[in-house]
Image (cartoon, rainbow, N blue to C red):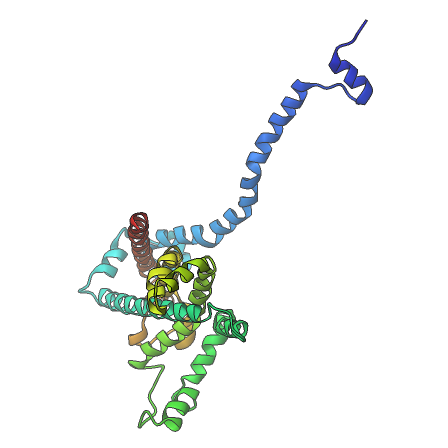
Length: 329
């Protein structure tokens, strides 16, 4: 009497082959594989909730409460005042509205200058160091030093260098080169805005250089060889080859530089302290002063929510227009 093939294989090579059981086991493993990536994301999601989402929601809640020096002791039971803080911040006839508008204008000008200068410097340095030559690696490393240094260490060094009487900047410009008759102030007055732009550009432009350098590595050399055969010079190659090929990189890079510059708090706070000069009163420091100096946390939270809404709208418009332009390119 002969046995079925499955039973014969089971007696010779081990346990009998059971296709239904294997199918059930496979079905149990498939959901496990499907959920495993989500399990790996849980720590990151919890950190995001703890660091960003929950504080942001608390800030939104505080923006509709009267949280000031009188109610701060029991701030969870502060009176609900609705949109009064938003109305006070947006009312241009009030001192708070006028100061916020001036700070917003200063921040926009500061952001535009920083983004443009960082992108130009990064592009120029990346293109100049695109072709190999002796010492290229050393120059690339030196260019990345400002971005690699801790922010506080780098900016506090600039603060010492920009001191009027003992700073290195005035020692070079006034005593060495004789460009000024008298030593100017760099941390107060109109020059404070120039100092803030210079320090921020010095700090951030290596990131633009690094990003554009990475983008240049993806451009085939054959495109430049064909351009040279067609008689294109360096400027034509930059316009016709480099910039169009870098468009996806620049799209992300400009958005990141815009958000970093607009939101940056560490550089102006370390450079000027809690009381920034009016000419360098960017929004991040202005909101800090409204919250932690005047103890009006409700008004400061309302300003933060308005800034968040502006950044979301500006980023969405930028992504929409840049995406359409990329589709038509």
